[in-house]
Image (cartoon, rainbow, N blue to C red; front, top):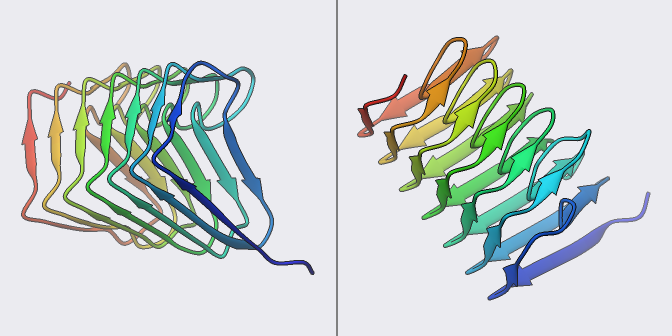
Length: 171
């Protein structure tokens, strides 16, 4: 199978249908970027959708006001690894699960991230992790809303670790 290496850096992605959609094995680096006002009509990951990638690294990146009709208003990721550091998820919307993010069968590491004012039509206003072993450290979840359960987060069928994080005014 072909492997690839994708880098996105210092860019601003304005309204577009899911500007980054990576499928298959490979490595993606997203650094110093802003994804704002993007929409995945009938799909996952309003700004970024990653499926089957071996590793994804996201650093110093903002997901602002993106929307997905299904999973992950800002980010949808199903693959084997994700490292997310110093990222901001603000005002993202998912009509289904995971306003800020949706992870599926993923061992994700989140460090020093902010989740504020994200909204989910069902569960996990800030985020939803289904399977895997997410590790969350030094993150803030503030004013996220889910119509169903988990204004801040929902963990389903996974073994999460949450340390040194702040949860405030989530509904």
